[in-house]
Amino acid sequence: MAYDTNNIFAKMLRGEIPCIKVYEDDHTLAFMDIMPQTDGHTLVVPKESAETLMDLSDEAAAHWIKSTKKVAAAVKSGLNAPGVVLFQLNGTGAGQTVPHVHCHVIPGSIADLRKPHATTAADTDHLKMLAEKIKAAL
Image 1 (cartoon, rainbow, N blue to C red):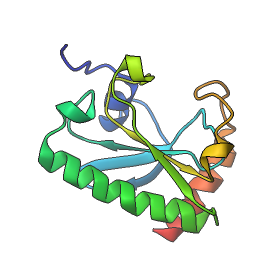
Image 2 (cartoon, helix red, strand yellow):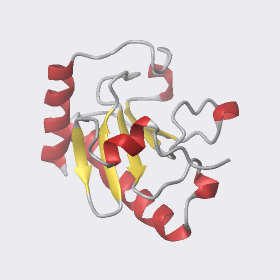
Image 3 (tube, rainbow, N blue to C red):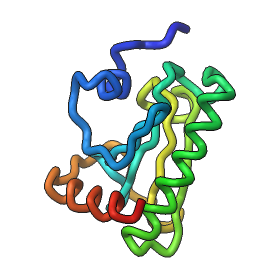
Image 4 (cartoon, rainbow, N blue to C red):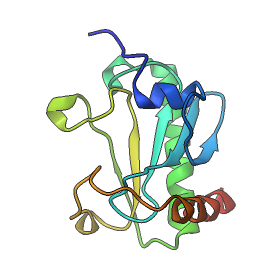
């Protein structure tokens, strides 16, 4: 299947729709999930067009994991989280809802993830406040 250039993350990467940025470099973008499972739920996406991890080049994957590691440390530190859950889904059969490879960075523990993903939109001002705390920890 061909990469869908009109998916929401591709549009964010092109600047066609806004996001609450936490981190950006030449290869990756990290932003607040607007329908978080917990406060501070952040997404890290590579800028390379790839639907799943298996579609991503090794070079882009290396940059992406480096950025994910950096963002995860900032989420943990900036939000005083006891831990950080990282998860990444590949394909609709695994529960992936946006066809662009991404990693979820979620402060807390796996036990905190009782709320289903993408069910309730968060307050934008609250997300911006959390993003500032995370950015300050970068």
